Length: 101
Image 1 (cartoon, rainbow, N blue to C red):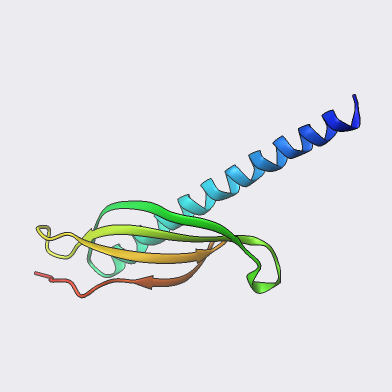
Image 2: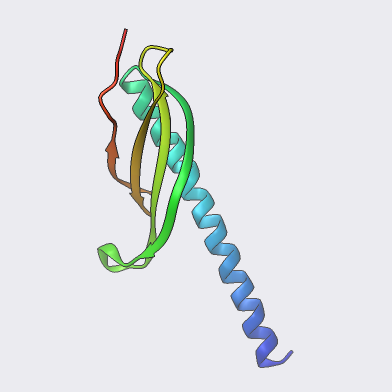
């Protein structure tokens, strides 16, 4: 095996690890949104990742992710909230004013 082949294998491994890390962050976001909405008596309709980029907050490199989720307070209306995360830590959850029963 040449140095180029070893480097290529390490690069492929690193890309794979980062893919699984981002996937794990998305699953954590989904669980957090479900708990948050359940606690506040809301119904989760959908969740999607808006953006993900590397950041160096808290002294290490991790992913800064923004998720958009739709929810309903009364079962008829649809609202969009936003959640920001660094790694698996939730930094901010923002919901607009919404109507409840």
